[in-house]
Length: 260
Image 1 (cartoon, rainbow, N blue to C red):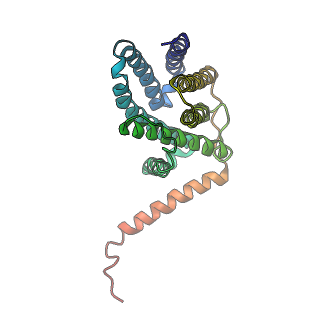
Image 2: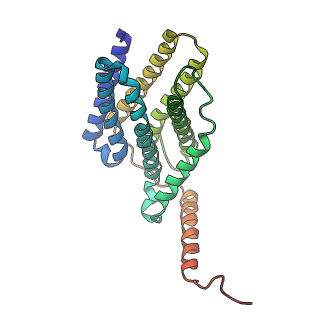
Image 3: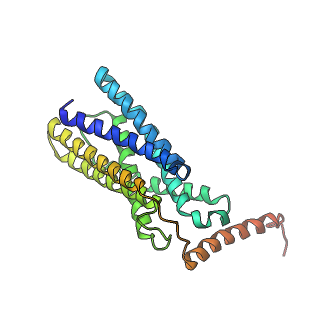
């Protein structure tokens, strides 16, 4: 491992630990518990990866193939948590199935992105590695789409850059753009040294995202604004219409058995 790799690894680990400490100190973990768990997991997984890469380098790929699906699963839950947290101003007025609907919506978006991912194919790696890389690219695209949707709808959702949800999504979006761009470049480069330089660039961008989160979490969050009357009315109307339809079906058990 080169000096640059060691520097990036120690700096990243230090920032991850610092952010976990900030989440605990500022009690942000109460607002975003899954995000806090995910960042704690990144600390543990980075430590395990470092130990395996140093003492058992031949098994590092096996660890990566095991770690990445779990990492992506946690990322998915983080996106669900962020989307649910965005609805804080009217969350108490929404029906219980709203969280289920959000989960299915993000899952559907991921399924739609899956065929588009994997467009960058790296030669001379095993098929299971291709699947892992495709999964990684799928979540990169999904995180980018989530950030774009949240930023584009910031006015409707009454979000500002000092709101935790948008801060987290911004960090994820920046790193995801770098990761996706790096995947595109790695297909074009020839040689392990050039491939590794791209990996270092992606790691550096991840470190920048962590620095942004650290600065953001050091600042006090602005009081969350209420939704605009139009957005509030729209969300309540949608949830109310769905609830009314469900009640109508429950109160009409003979539907379909009537005769003219």
